[in-house]
Length: 84
Image: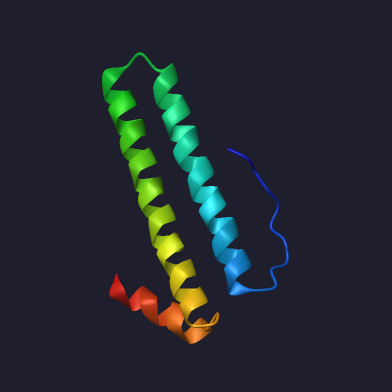
């Protein structure tokens, strides 16, 4: 998992894309860790964490699609968080 330094963002799109990359990296980190452990319970735990990160990625991806559909409307993106 890369540890990128926070940077200045110019748009909601950039923020969502960066967050998606972090979720993708985290999922891969957990899958890699699962591949390296002989402990079955730990492996299942790590794979479950990877699944959760994939879910986070998918949620952010949906928000990015919503953002693009609304011409990057911050209000529409913020309102979509009320769904949870």
